[in-house]
Image (cartoon, rainbow, N blue to C red; front, top):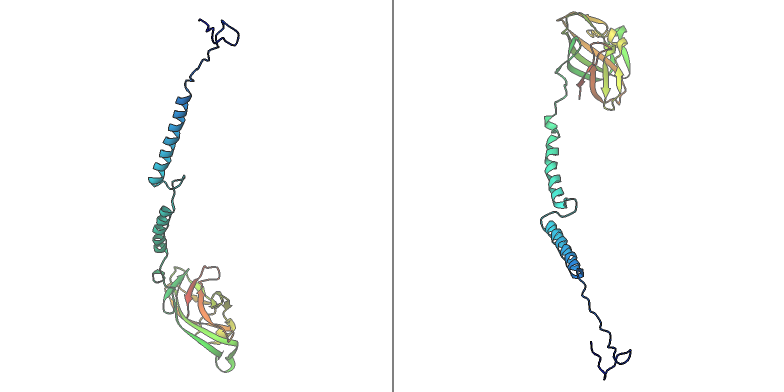
Length: 219
């Protein structure tokens, strides 16, 4: 390389100026382009997910949930038994069974202050309630019907025992240790001494004190 005598270099005549080498970096522009492209692609994927109905990261949305809830309500309502579909509780005139006995309550008397006649009169502490019924032995062995196995129930759920002492002197009571053979029927009267404010609800009838019993509505 020849020097320019009119423009000597910084090191004196004969020494040229140092040449600056310009080096173009390779690869940096390609990496930036790749990163931008990935960001754009990710944005497109997110937009596609939103507009396709994803709604939320879990894939759940309020509209779908509300439709599901609305569809469940009719089925729940249909599963509830209607008042008219419920079996009617047995009442006066219906035949019910417990153990070896079939019972049928025929009528109920309330508000009696005394029962019996002459020297056999019994006076109630409150009032007497008389439950008339038929008792049939439907078993294959004799069974004893007794009033002290029976319970009268008021609207508060309280249970009342029969008054056996009054039943002894009542004509045709047949409620005190009456032995009934298979196939036979006895008409009896159960006597209960209850408060004057008593509100009757039902009677629980048993073939013995150890049986499960059956409830008959008296209202």
